[in-house]
Length: 326
Image (cartoon, rainbow, N blue to C red; front, top):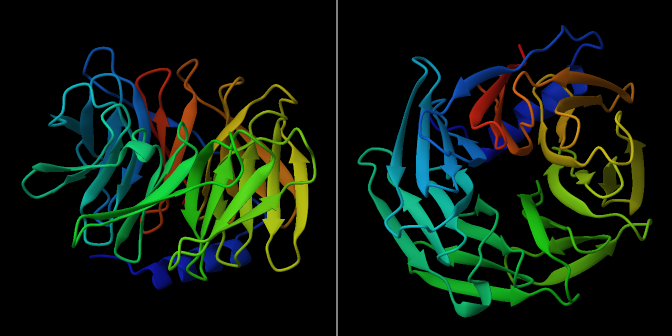
């Protein structure tokens, strides 16, 4: 059964406002990917609980059934396409960015058939995708652009970020229908009107800030990982106020992937320490959880709201990780 976006926001909202202050200890359960030299870059989870991931090095789209632990994978139609980001759309289709081939791919989970959509030259290195209002949006970190594909018509719109070298990276939609982009090349978040594509830059206070990935909570607040300075940050668009919290392992911790947990906390990864960090926005306290495999490097993570699980792509160790948030 598909969970509507409104239900997802309500579920997360309840979790964020009603979560208990005492949280049981968490652990990371790992699933070893059998394909040699695998490199899981990003994960995604469907309404049925199936976990999908991109194997960027081998150019495969992987599928993990948590009920059985069985992992299967499907090669991308274009060899060496370098699948990077991945997203499950509301209709169940699995979308990914073929970064080195300049395509968006759509996998039908029933037939496992993949259809590719070529992108214009100005967006030949698609990075992070999101499914939003029937369209597939994406960033292109290498070409300083962002765009959208209308699957119904095949039409692609691309816009160039007005700030040179901004490196548009992580992307998320907000409850008001707009889109936020983290810009790794400068101290900026981008706010996009999803109807017109209009871009509004929002500068972060510290000139050295480098936001990499982000999450938007049901109240509209934008949370981001400051990869360069070792901070978790939060922008309140209603007031323009920005707050920051130092990551437990310090300035060189390299905060990376981030997601909203159903336990009322923001979860993110420290790239250099092999730690997951859970931040409680009510108490402003942080808890760390060690990832069993070394040098895991969680570039992206997603929440299965229905089953209260957090799924991680452990790029450095070739595994898919799971944290049970019940």
